[in-house]
Length: 120
Image (cartoon, rainbow, N blue to C red; front, side, top):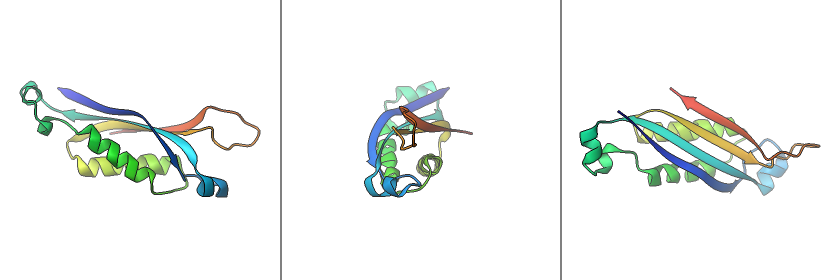
């Protein structure tokens, strides 16, 4: 059986981006993560965190990665994925979605630009 654990819609102001103003002032971001682990009914009924992935830990990983500026939201997503997989070898697949809210694109008004990194 596959168990999916998700953290949805975490919001941040962070300094990711290629433009100097993004690095100086920051921008608003929204991050969601969904991870899958293989488990069984007996493990699920044990009521133990050993049978799951701690979503509080996942949210802390996201928070820490978001504090480390980089140029591309693709890189942000890859760093989040790598850190989660390193912390939880039981994770077999997942999706990391990073949205840059109201990106500073001249002559364009959009709600967000986003990437979704899916694995395996």
